[in-house]
Image (cartoon, rainbow, N blue to C red; front, side, top):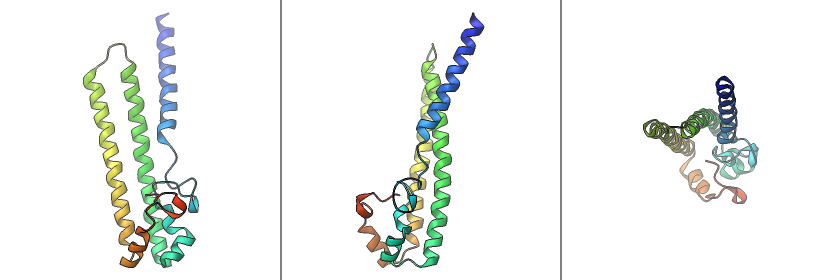
Length: 155
């Protein structure tokens, strides 16, 4: 009987981890609705053909922006995956019969650290992107605070 309970618990944890990872991971930034298929998080609109034309982006600027965007998307996907895994681990800790507050808080600190890394990477990415623009292009891009058609900056 005890063996069946242990197997059932292991299956439940595996299912919980699988669903948690899928639900917390979310869509890959840069994929989804918006120009060039970009979703929030990957300055998708900046290299959209109509915006690139309005800003007067050179082919070299567009290529560099695409390159740093693609790298950013990969970095963020890795961090999102790590956060999802840590959240699943936290859920397991929170469901144990005897709560271990130290382990729970340590796991939450790991999650917070990863979230802080994501925030830093977003800012680094935004700075890198804006550094590729001329002062005039930066000024014009800043008028798109909400992005074209109010869809958001996609940083």
